[in-house]
Image (cartoon, rainbow, N blue to C red; front, side):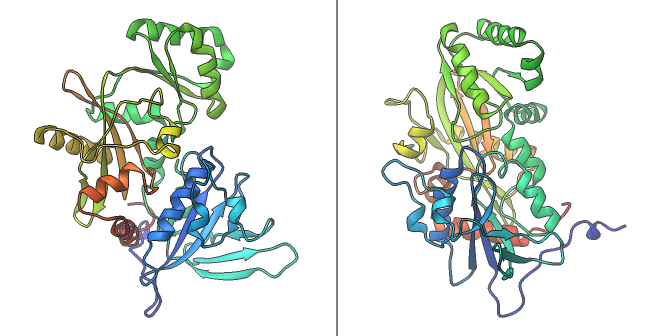
Length: 387
């Protein structure tokens, strides 16, 4: 059997019809609100002369809703995040995706009414962050439907969401990572005291403070910097509130450096890097600092030419190691020793107007509208299925 039967080539819309982009946002994770904000920025930037757009929101309880195409209502207002529920055109209607590769028609269904065909979708721009969207679940659904989408596939999305396996992949490809330990759900259920003791032993070996994190969450939700034993139990409970699997990392002393990777026609390229300055009002670069208080990153980072080239090379290596597609933001520490250590990658990084990924590409000569366009065109070029 030929590989072509597994990987159909790019499919373009019929002549005379613009490609139709479904922007999917919201979702069931704790990052629901910031996903709405991200989608608003993308909707504002998409070239409406080149693409038709269909906004689809996923509510916090998992309903796929037809929403207003109104980016102005999708911004942070008075320090409050928007929601899909505020944008949905109905409290009960649902958007249904096709599940046959030869059918890309999206249907809207309202109880007691005849389902309405909304037309074909040529590509999906999934602006979901966190579990049930960024972690490979949505990507698998779209692969089953044979619909192209922006960003990484199932494997890379899952690896990029799970901090443990992300670090294991990086280590196997020779990328430097910092000390960490992981406690899985069954370990808590089997012997909670032993699991806690392992974290205490880790801190004794590597020193306080440590960071206690949900293993599969983003936007700095559920993360606590723990300075001593007294704060450990509360930090574990907070992390497990977001994910039953937690990861504990030692404090790496150095500068926080980020670098964007974008897929071009000839392969992935790295942006100019950025630096996250030391936290002042916040103990570390947490959710409030990122999205509410608009922490200012330095773009480009004040690095030497050699350091810039090194972190760019490491970012592309991380992109390739995890089999990523489309885009990635790679986060590093530049240690006092001069060594770069990779902390994590984000396969669907923050895309708000103040987010570091678009700012790094802006400084690298790729403005926000062009960035959005490049991602859509890369998705349309990419074959569906195994690749």
